[in-house]
Image (cartoon, rainbow, N blue to C red; front, side, top):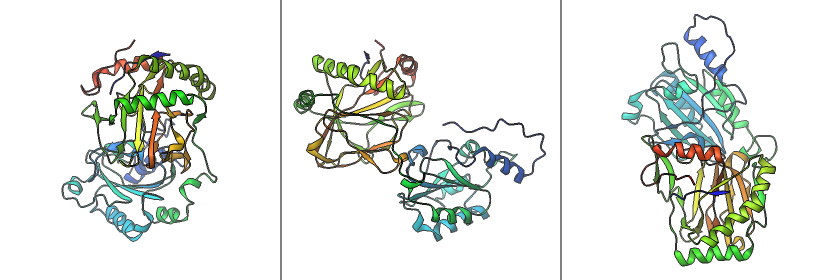
Length: 392
């Protein structure tokens, strides 16, 4: 495994031949709805709401989602949507279900005629109809065509409707708890592996952190075509310390190479050859240490990441801090001291708040040579605070 230099969804298309049509608006809508059928995953996107300029829809998995497209909140469909949400407000709590409206009327944004109502209700502003195009909900003139979608906790279509919200609301009220949406409890596709680091190495890493101290940890976001480092304690509260001691770094790398890489190849048929980051991270109860739901490869600066690794260093010494994968229910995962959990960087995951003590963990990312090429190609998209990747 080669060390790496440390540095701080597409739309669906129906390709079947449908024959020549001279469509009315209703025909166009019927064709659009056909593009997303029951069981299909929906596109992920980033768009503004009244509360956030870059809300990432891919992070809302883990609950049922009602997604409603309207040309304007003042249209007949828009008024019906607002009325339906208000009449059934108790259904939208961000735990069991969330409502997302999409409006193409610029006045809805400038005049704040519809806006976020937390928990459970948010509106995306789509004046250029970009979101509607991703979902196929446009008429023959390029305007937004109203439509409802009900999504499961994995952001796949359960049902769609082009007229009244009533069928969506009725169906939603009868659905099981989100963690049972598949008819039984499901588990995340992760690899749990004990005995990767021995206790003495875990202690040495904690001692290094306590001697050197940690710095507040940020996360990567896209801004104007660049990957930048952002710090937001409401989203992530953690401190990181880069391991600069060469023998300690080598000890970590060799154990991952010998004890973890072969198991990853066995479980996922992926041969990891490179490792990014040699950091010890600290989540403290006093600081409310946590990391809210996120994916690890959604920017140009992180697109090369293939698998995330969490190796707990002191599991009995803290409460909370478990990992959870919302797309696969509410089950939590907490490897023992020296044990690892490995998962695809594409999976939505969160680190729950630590409620007692301090959690220490070693948190590298693994990738291969093809991903290293991608990482190098993406250097022009990195801001100065992220730093360029120097392949070795």
